[in-house]
Each structure stands twice: as structure tokens, then as C-alpha cells.
Image (tube, rainbow, N blue to C red; front, side, top):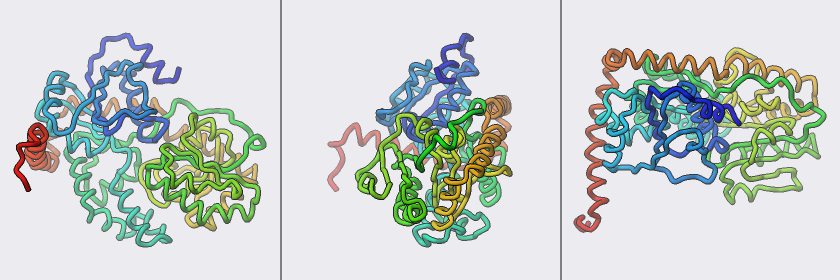
Length: 440
């Protein structure tokens, strides 16, 4: 069994804390890093013998996690429907976790109305407004990666601050009692440029148990590998960039090189890029991402925009597979430590780095060892779970004072909840009586 299965099977104490997780989607840990992080958080809560209910308005995906086998109660909920009020009032959770700010927008006012004393936590996965702003900057200036990843560039702040998305997202961060951030760089951005109180933020990156001490050797590995959900815009952009600008340069130096691209939800536009003669292989979702990563010699992750920390690069370290990425890909992952591979920011540099890492066994081994050090230093499950649970316990004990100190959050809740409440009630009434609406 996996670690989370072991935890679920070994629980014996009566649960003392009721946790409600409201998900934008049902978790698919094999399809996205965000879902993987959610399952890691669930493991933390199971270790505390919490009683967990996972609710979502989303349809069930083919590859979703089996939450019921972990002892987690599943509930299907609806948007703009007062049946949720009855459900959450009866459950009376002590802690409520929203997995995206859009979910907090929809259900936050209902939770506060029915369970005012419940601690409200937002799991961000990444700062979506940052990812969106970087995408817009890339569209305007495709070759200016410096302006996309350098926080000292005023254009990045202006792009974020002027967006409706940022207005909504940062307001949601204020309304919650605690916000989980996978990126310590984004914490610095929010507390610095946007003056968000540090008391509302908590660093909780991707987590692993222990560090692998043996890997498949250099000589037994072959090919380049790229992996990522095709529905995630940064991943699709990276595939196009590799196809048009990076892979041709690599093939000039390594004519026999092969690139295998795996991704969940592969669309026709992606499979159309497949070209075996060019060594450019577009595949579907990997049934075992770690297995295919462990057989590759180099992981390619040429991300031109994005936010948060990258699950594919964590997987590469877990498999002892050195990576070539951009400053965007490496952001918030290595801290002050050496990157387990090479970082470059244009096609020529990326191709040169990929070829060098693919051929130089000594450099390759150095990168592999750097990955082990990085995993040990920054991503250990026990360290981050203990820190998170301590933070939650403190907040539960001091919640009235904590909320009193967050006047801006209280003000935003007041105005948002009023407007959202009446809009939701109007939508619900309209849905119940669709034929009674006057003609336009």
C-alpha cells in the first residue's frame, strides 16, 4: 500500500476534528500536481485521525482518487443551491478547506453563515493571477522571459494588479483565515508587492516521505522526457516551444535523440504534433509517471510562464532524473541549493544544456545528487505536516483575535457575501422556475 493507504488503514482513535474539503474537481493525483498536493494534505489530516468529508460540484473523472477506500466520505453538491446550507449545517465541520479561490467565492458565504466558528482555509496550489499575468506578458513579448520571471520588473506587477482575476483572488485570500502556498517566492510577492498580512499565509509545498537512495544508472537510461497535463496552459505552451524552437536544435547535435511527451487529456491538436521521424513522440497519460520518468535520461520542462512549484520536476528528482528547465520552472523549488540539472531561458541555451546533460555522465550524476539534497532539505512530509498542524491548532485556539486583526478580510467578507448571497438566491429561484421568467 502507499503511505496514505497505510495511514487510512491504521487509524484507531475516534476522530476528534471534522474537516470538510470543498473541491473544484475530484482529485486526480496522476493527472496534476495540484491533485497530488491535495492527497498529501489529506494524508496529513488522516494522520491526525480527522474525520474527512470531500464535497464537489464537479463530475467524476475517470482517473480520480479512491477517497472512499481511505475512509473519506464523499458528497456531491450543487452550485447556487440551498441544499448545501442544510448539508453543512448538519455536518458542522471544525475546519473547511477550499481547494481554489473560485470555490471559496461560491461557498464561503454559506459556510460562514451556517458554521461561523469553522476555520476557513484556502489551498491555492499556485497564485493564479501570477500565472495569468505571465501568460499575458508572453503573448505580448514572446522572447522577453526576463520580464516574465523577474519580480523587480514593474511590468509584471502592473499586469497582475490591473487584472480582474487578481482583484478576485487576493480578496479571497483576505477572506480566509489561512491560505496554503506551495511557493515561498509567492508568499514574498504577496506580502511585499500586495501587502497581504503574513499571518494569513502558510508555506506548504509538495511533500514526500524520505529520499530515494538508489536509481537506474546513466547507461541504462535513454531518451528525453516531458510530462504534464495538456489542459494546463503552461504545459501546452512548452510543448509548442519544444516542437518549433528547441527540439530541432537538439536533433542537430543528437540526430538519434528521441523525446517522449506524456500528458493527461491529450487533445487532437497535441497528437497532431507527433512525428516519429523527427523523434518527437506525443503520448497519452502515463499510467505510472514515476516509472517512465525513471527510465528517461533527461527531463525537459521549458516553461515560459506559470506559477507555484512543478510536480513534474519533483517527480524527476524522486527518480534521479536530471532536468533542464527555465527560471519559471525552477522558481521556489531549490531555495539557496544547487538545481538538480541546468537552467536556461532561450531555445539555444536550453538545447545546449539538454545535449550537455544527456552526454556528460559526471555532470549528470552531480545533478542527481543535488536532487537528493534538495528533496531532503525542502520537501519532507513530516516537517511540513507538523508545521501545518501546529499552525491550524494555534489558529483554532485564537480564531476570534485572528479575525479581529484582519479587518480588511472582514470588510471584504461583508460586501462579497451580501452580493453573492442575493445573486445565488436569484439564480436558485430562476433554476427552480425557469418558465416563470419574463420574456426578454
